[in-house]
Image 1: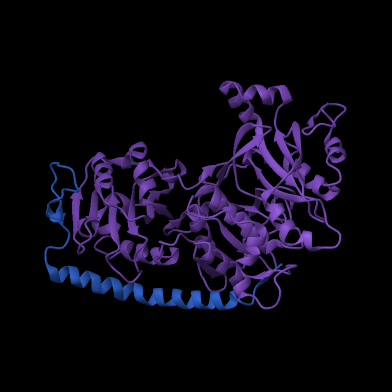
Image 2: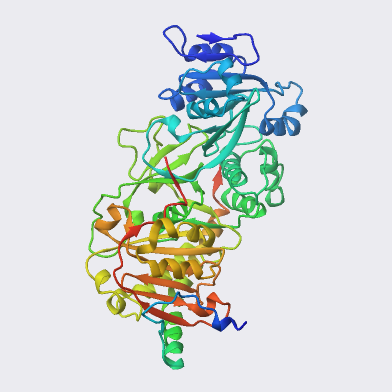
Length: 494
Length: 61
């Protein structure tokens, strides 16, 4: 059924007579066949109704139109279409009523799957897109998500997801598209970062380029890194052949809620989530790093659809719309855009943890924790803010009320590295026994980056640096400690 | 207010005890720590330099 075929907002509801071809017809001349096929691949399992917002002025396309398309002899339209997807039938009357009734607005929002801007660009028409992860069907993964408010004829809906855009092959190719996705995530998520449009993304690299920058023929990895630095996210670059724990470090940044640019042979995607099998029994006998449970990364590849899974050993049933054709070993390097005040990289924190936990260390399990000394330990490393860590102390209980109160009182740095300590059985239930907290604003060579070390039997706290003076480590014996929930507020379940 | 008099740990039966009772013990711990992590951090520094150099050759299109 099509409501208002010739109106400014025709609404297609799929039924026996109306399918995706109706969208293809109504969305002409913007929506070309390849774009339609990508939408079907992304949304066929969830979308039941599509509202087509005609004459839409898209801020990102208008930016490339003004700076590039308008300078051509033959110019495309300056306007776009914006498609809004719902998993139930929606009517214009329903949209209007939702403006006046908060219950109806909430119901409408529950049906909303997000939007996709359709640009008049060839060969790729899919512009700025923000879809709810649920639009692709169940994933059972964890991912970084951001939030937007969307107005449809004055009715304001909300959507969470990870931004997506396809390259237009003129101003942007995969490199600029991947940069745009990561930058839009940051500007949506944090007030600190400015919204950056596609031509501005290109301009971020102009001081590090030879020759002309548009039409774009691609970017070097280091140019992409420089663009991130200029926007206030100074990045670290890791290449597989130089870092022994490459996959673990990649996972650690994603687990920290930091989306990364993952470089393939001549292509780049954004990795921002992971799917892990917490019930797995990793092989070997030593300490397990939680990256060992990781089965797949959640990626946005501008050549495909949002929320693809990039599997460790390749897609089980072969590459499809929802599964990337790549595998972990195809990722040759990655760029991790860190917050400005994170000076200690993941690999250095891991070195610090290894030193603290080694067998003959005065702070190892053998010396301080008989309970953790038995069996295989599981270590989960991630970065978070002191504010967020404190915010969730109450709900997590930290296994011991004294630890919770001590952490609550401790002045914490803006960013801290956390190494949660668990055992295989407890970790399968998402529980931990303790953690090491380390100041992420420290230099790796400083032995006094301590904030705290917590085992079931003891809490070691640096009361000196907490008060901005010389390191002064104190220990407090703990009794009746219990396992408690791991910290899971960097990513959201999808 | 003397910052050293701020109580960070709530009152409880088990009082906080210093981890190192002698200054020399603490200094020995610091020395060993730096000595131990140093070689690995140096390897990491080299790995980063190489990664950054290679990033200048890696073309994404």
